[in-house]
Image (cartoon, rainbow, N blue to C red; front, side):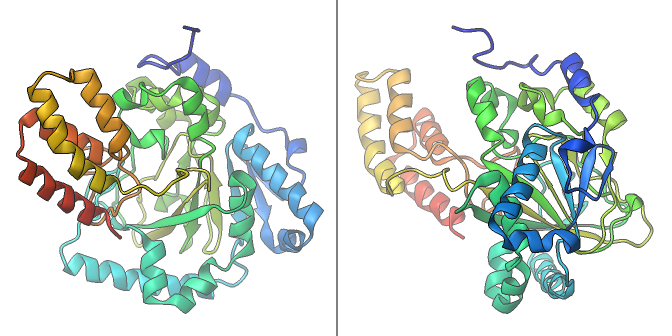
Length: 388
């Protein structure tokens, strides 16, 4: 096996992180930026918006953004991404109503990387806004700036999702992390994926934060570590104490105004900051945009397959006609092995970074000797929790 075909718990050494993040952005690489702060280019979209209407100039700007996100510092700020902030205000009012309604119903809004209860979160704010106020949705997401930055990193036909995060005064920072896909897996699971898939993970999604209010530094805007997405083993490394300490000492923050947008590579080490303000309720709509290519060729009813397969696996296991490795392979071929996409309101990542997958449920049921009826009921219940 070639060296570095897989990463392990020691990958992404602190020395490598220090070397990569000590570089500074060459401003000649970002000719369309109006300024650079802490190596992050700032783009004035009031001035650049006309470029998005012209094919070659649009491509030139998108090529620059793609370079920044991939080979450069890993983040861009799009100042005045919303020329008119009225859609922001309408969406904010809708989100506040949704938060109040969900809290009244007992929702907790658990976070992947922050202490539960320190903020208010709306899972799937995309669908909820669209169903509640479709006109507001159209005005809010009908934004060519958002479309261009998504296409710059992911190409056309991308899939939009979003989650609102509202952090009140006193809200604590998240821990430093990388994001979806591999950033939402445990270190043990991430280590099972070969190194080339770690590289692939970073180009399968785009992270963004749309500012719904002014966010001065005391309100805790996102902490970023420029160039950290370049660390090859970073999906393993971010969990280690020395890396977390380095992040705390070297991360930067940029203030945002209402209607600004921050977009960054999901492999960039980042974390929401402490809200130490006295009166700023920091609201951002966190968009997580996926590549169109993250899909299988055929539509498969895996729930029906699992229901049919489970009794057969039980019989073959009892007769010792399949060993543990063979059972694992059969489950992998039939069941959905990935926990996402799911409905995080009803299927939250309680006790970890991801809910239990369909395949994991089947393996657990076999290991614990569940009856066919018990597994069938659990399978239906799990499918119900995953539906939007």
